[in-house]
Image 1: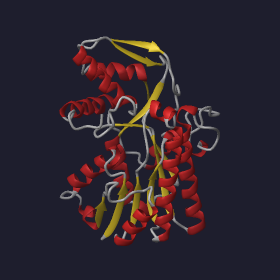
Image 2: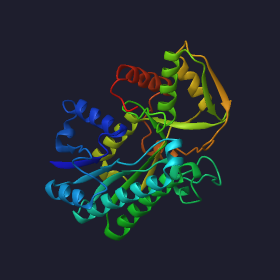
Image 3: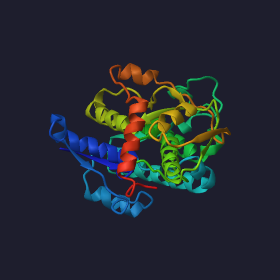
Length: 317
């Protein structure tokens, strides 16, 4: 039996992956070949060398899925640039160093499309373009930390014959998201704002560019793709793969969310404080997984809203 360590197991992707693995225990024959570890930060502190060394020594790990990160939305990225860079650099370097020390040859490492240049030579951006220019200033600290993780994965692959594969998802949303208005990403933040407006009966004011666009992906999709990659890891012949559906205008996303809050009156102010678009290519993914269909955005958002309302007392907010 192989042991798989998943860092960030209490985060959005990690929790969705746990749900997927638990639901698959009875129906997936190859799932019985794996022991899954989802330690909390109290068990495995990725900022502490001592904690990581002890955990790796006590658990014979064969495969790593590195999801842990200090992550947040636009306002957190702008306010805590030092912490976003420093903590992510330390976590990423530590997990790679100890993975190598304990001879863990295979792993999946989660990047983000914010590693891509703010002003690329063309759209959509492909996997080869991630080092082409500076990331957008609004999330540069997080973007550089993730970009350097990709770079270091390639160093280990070339120098020590490791197989550390990076996945690069676009804007993630779904169950177990962080709905804190100061730290949330676009979908979670909008859902929470609509909910609060539905309670207060006040007009909701939303600032965004009228032409601003985002690619969105449900955390359930990422979990399914990770599981598929693990079960078919020997056949993977790429070092990095973008996980992204087609663009959607943020104003259209707002319309979708508003359907679940029909009583809320809202106004949109044309004021984009972040990056207007960062469209990335999904051609490589389509070529490797031609039969995979992403969760429909409206269905996924509605499902997220229902989960949010049902679990409002206990969610991160």
